[in-house]
Length: 69
Image (cartoon, rainbow, N blue to C red; front, side):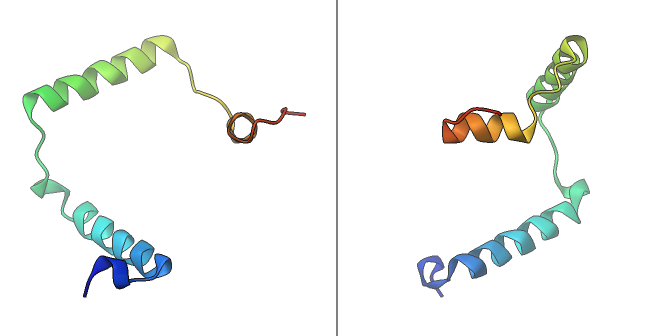
């Protein structure tokens, strides 16, 4: 079976099943020291910045090019 033969819905289902199988075996995923350091740096930056981002309404408006009213 080729991926291109699958419908969009079947592809989404397959992707979810793949993700679930990876998530259920998190011990098999190892990070390099560089990856761990990068994650630690990003977390430290977030904690010092405290910027929680924008709400969905604002983001959607930016994407669609409309106002937030």
